[in-house]
Length: 198
Image (cartoon, rainbow, N blue to C red):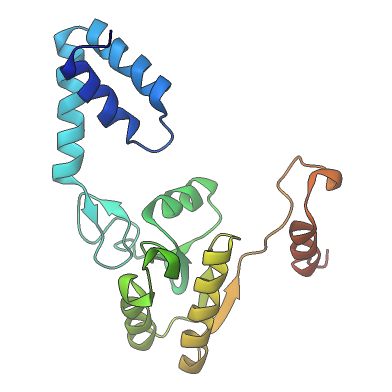
C-alpha cells in the first residue's frame, strides 16, 4: 500500500530539492495536504513569482529584480574592490556579514572537470573583461576550500596576474568558537598561513 499517485509525485518532486530527503519530502507533502487551499495557492504563487521576476544581475550575477542590482548600482560602493564568489548566494552571505564594501562577481560555479565544467562554462570571460575595462585595484577570491574551488582559484590567479591587478584570497582557517583539537591538518595549516599581525 502506498500513497495515491499525485501524492507520490509531490513527494518525488520535493525530494529532488537540495537538503530534502525522502522522509522530509513525505512530511512536507503531508503537511501541504493538510493545509488549506489558500496556503497551498500562496506557496505555489510565491514559487512562480520568484521564478518569473528574479534574474541574475548582468554585472555581478547576484539575484535581482532590477538590472543592474542595487549593489552594482550603488555609487557609494568601492568599485576598485571586486570580490569573486562561486554563486549569487555567496554574495548575500557576505552582504549579511557586512565585511565587504566593494562590488562582486559570481562565477556561477567552479571548475569541475569530472562534471564537465571548465572555465568556459563559468563567468570567467566577463570577469576578465571587467578587469580590463574597469581596472580595479584588487580582486578578492572568496572561494571555498575544496579541491574544485582550489583549482578555480589557481586558474583565476593565472588569468588575472598578467592583467596587473592585485589578487588576494580570503583567509581560510578555524571557524569562530571551535577548538584546535577538532580541526584537521589542512585547516590548521591554512589558519597559520593566513595569520596576521596584531
